[in-house]
Image (cartoon, rainbow, N blue to C red; front, side):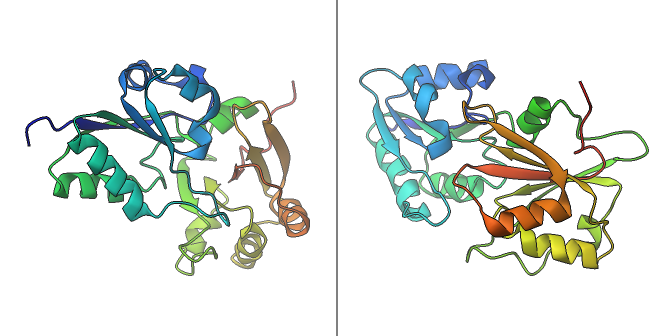
Length: 244
C-alpha cells in the first residue's frame, strides 16, 4: 500500500533510560507515534518528539487495560496512515511480553516491522543485586517462568521437578500473587524451604527495592501483603548474594 509506514517493536529494558540501546533511542526519537507499556513511560517518553502521539496501552494485573486486539489494531491503523510507529515494551518484549500476537497481526496486515531487543528485567535485577545468574557446577541452568496464567492464577502445567531443581537459577515473572502457592508446591517437590530468594521490585527505577530472603519467608510475606510495585522473583543458590 502506497504511503504505508512501519512499526518498530522496541524493548525499553526495565525503565532506566540509560539502559536503552542506541537503536531503541534512535527509533523513539524518530517516531510519529509511540504505543507504550506502563513500565516504559516516565523519563523514557521524554525522549520522544514533542509532536509525537503518545498512547498508553499498558497491561497491569487487576487493572482495566486495552485488549490485545485493540493494541494490534492501533499499530496497523497508525502504520497505514504512513506513520513511523514505535511499540514500546518493557524489559525485553520477547520474554512474556506478548510479542508474538503483535508480529502475527502485523504480518497478516502486510505491515513492515522490526524488533529491537532490550535489557531483560532479570538481567537488570541481578546486576542491581550484584549477583550473576549462573555459576559453574552449582547453577548451570537458568529458567524463566510466568506464575500468572490468563485467568490470573498459577498455571497448572508447570514442570515442578525442573522448578524444584536446587542446581538451577529460576526467575519468576508476574509471581507475587501466586508465589505462596508456588512455594508450597516447590517444597512438596523437594526444594528446601531455606532456598535463597530475591524479590526485586521496580528494578532500575527510583523506587527500586531488593529484598533478600528465602522461598518460605517470601511466601509468608507475600501472603500478608503484595504491594503495587512491579516485581520479579529470583530463587536458587545465587539469590543470596554477597556481603560488601
